[in-house]
Image 1 (spheres, rainbow, N blue to C red):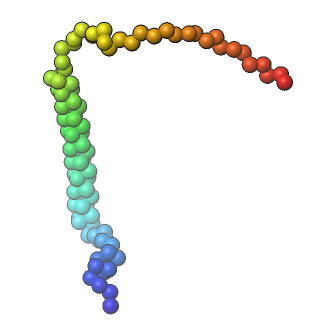
Image 2 (tube, helix red, strand yellow):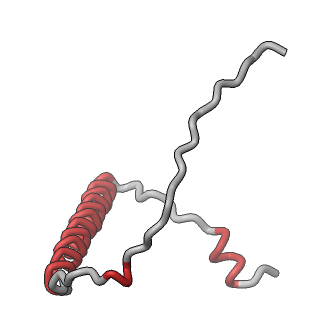
Image 3 (cartoon, rainbow, N blue to C red):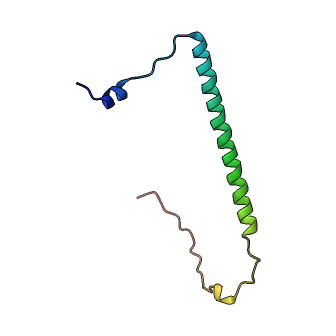
Length: 87
């Protein structure tokens, strides 16, 4: 005897045979898809606006750099040598 969970997992919903129900479910599916797309666009625009506002409001005034942040060093330029292909 199969358990109720096994029977629920193996069953697949069939498409309705009534043409009116097919049309209604198709339109409902399109509305759901449209709603998800619109929701995603609004969330994306909200995220862009929020990041822009956080960058604008969170900016600190520019301060002069102190000499402690500067590193002094000596550099040597090494010429690129040619490699001969004949051996």
